Image 1 (cartoon, rainbow, N blue to C red):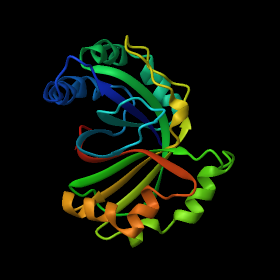
Image 2 (image 1 turned 60 degrees about the vertical axis):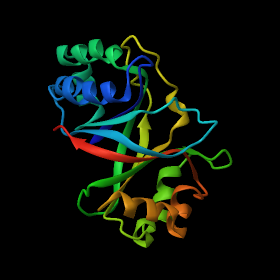
Image 3 (image 1 turned 120 degrees about the vertical axis):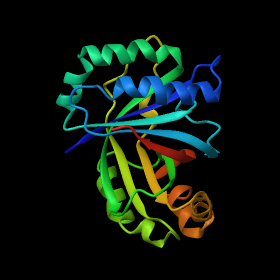
Image 4 (image 1 turned 30 degrees about the vertical axis):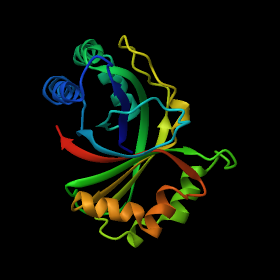
Length: 225
């Protein structure tokens, strides 16, 4: 199955949000697009912070990158390339701290990629067994997004590997705190906010008996590759 190298990172403290977004899109994005074996590459720029847990085990998030590869082995080949070395040299120029999660996607509601996107990062609740979590969650949430008003597509990304940190001269976050990264697309920001506040949205994102949300964001998704 295709895997995604999902990078959660903060901006460098002396870099403004505008400088951060500009460098990520115009400079770093062009470097990462050259990685050998890369399938797709999406940048998720935060438009609005809708919720952030005060005791989150994950560092501050200012952006989420998603780079797909055909396998972990293919990703590791890319990691050893000169192109990836160039990416690592550029990271300290705009990023503060970075956590790398390798995920696999389950598309629970097929559909089109719409202009507005909700993303949230979740951790496993303390009283929930780790073994078989992905299978149990998928079985009980298969139709969860179908009850959300205006939802166009829903993809759940469970973490399958935490052993590929990036050594690029910036602090590495602790990947053990995150269990899943979720994606929901809507036609516009108002629809996304309304769905978040609906009973079905609160049940899915804030009252899930298996996963607890660490951060919920309204994103501007930019497809680089």
